[in-house]
Length: 163
Image (tube, rainbow, N blue to C red):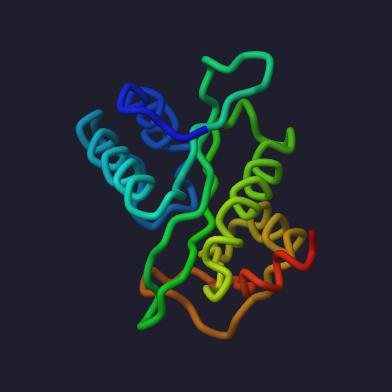
């Protein structure tokens, strides 16, 4: 679901946790203010592009945000791309939430941006994210982003053909 301005404590709970940021080159959020600024950017994406990062909750507990996932318009080198993102509380790891949320986000974003590549930027040590990207059809590229993460990529049109 699209996040709301009131979700900043949930953003901080997930993004401020060192365990959820083991593979994040920027590290965990250090304050609620940092999470509020991040959320404000996400909400602006929704207003501008009609897509963005979503708050994820179990179906039977919709008020319990366990993570964030989605697709955001961004730039990689000199190219506009869709960036696939997922980050969840450790208590929800291994339960399929990231894959389900990623598929839903791609299903929403790819028809709107069919000419864009979709990328996932993944640290070499983050094997679970790598496996998920590969299950979704992404392929590793030779290059890395400025933070040293591996670039996994699939054209939006190619991802849509997998449906």
